[in-house]
Image (cartoon, rainbow, N blue to C red; front, side):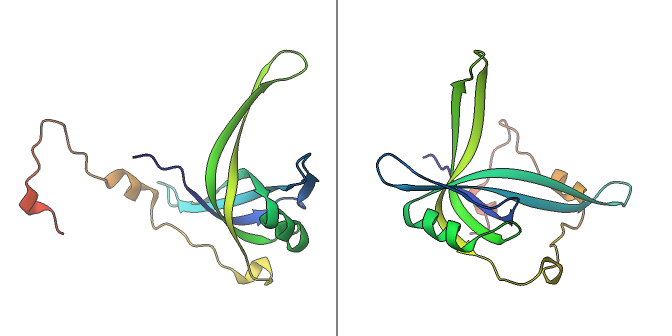
Length: 144
């Protein structure tokens, strides 16, 4: 079984760019910034920002171009797609995008009224136990 699913909640870094394809279908490109807040090993609060390219088609593209603008909060559900091509000087280029399948518009509240949700400590990510291949799993130990 395979799964290619992305969920993003973030803010637009610029106004949506819309186009009409030769087929007559609408296309809208948006760029979303997502933030991750955490406390490092020294106890300092840190922030990492990731930028995502999102493509919307059809009715989603129309709604995005009509209601979204730079700074708007949006929830996107979609799938990853990586395109590759050669530019004019023959260099191979790659671009990973999210193809939106669903979208939910965020509130029209100012950014300051939405507090960030922070992870407790970065070290918690490393506490996940690893099961070696040689270790046998007892079915009775599974909690469900």
